[in-house]
Amino acid sequence: MTAQKRGLGRGLEALLVDVSTPIRAKEVVQLAQSQPSPTLLDDHAVIAAVTLMKAIQKENANLVKEVEALKDLLDDFEALVQNLNIDKPTL
Image (cartoon, rainbow, N blue to C red):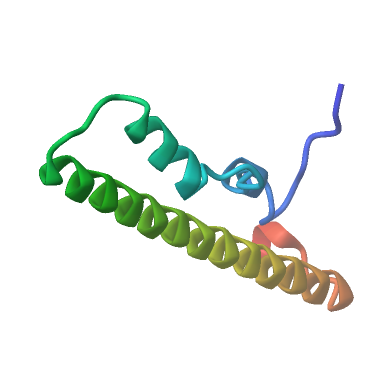
C-alpha cells in the first residue's frame, strides 16, 4: 500500500508517461516493406507515415518536458509554502 500524496503535486505521476520505448522509423518502414508495394504511391504513404510518427513523438516529448517543468514549479511552490509555514487550506 502506498502513501497517499497530499498537496499540489498529487496526480502528476499519471501525466508522466513512459516514453522510453518510442516506435522507431525503421520499424515502420520494415513493416510497410513487408507487404508488396510496387507502386510509387505506397512509398509516399510510408514517407507520410514516418513523418507523422516523428511529429507525434516530438509532440509527446514536448508535453512530457512541460509536465516535468510544471511538477518542478509545484514542488518549489510547496517548499516555499512549507518554509513560510502557511496553512494550505487558507490559500
